[in-house]
Length: 105
Figure 1 (cartoon, rainbow, N blue to C red):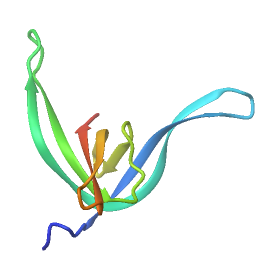
Figure 2 (spheres, helix red, strand yellow):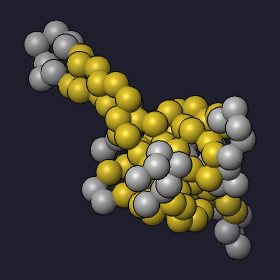
Figure 3 (cartoon, one colour):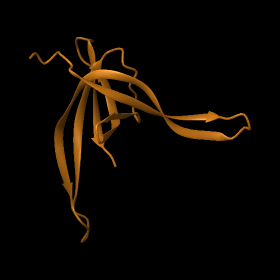
């Protein structure tokens, strides 16, 4: 298999603020699209804070087609995983985007 082929589908979600018919601001997560891509772990960090249970944060790279409208703050969901997008960039060839994301609860 070549590294350029995407074989899994992911969901892209965005936090939207909108006004309802009564003038109230409603804030909700809305599914933006499904996209084919790859998600793979990049690094792992452990934190120990004063007698608490140690926590582990895993940073992921999310690779998606260039036309995917992914922004900082969006969430990528698959299976039981939810990743929050921290940064988005286009590859040098311009044929895909790569985002840095961290797993959240």
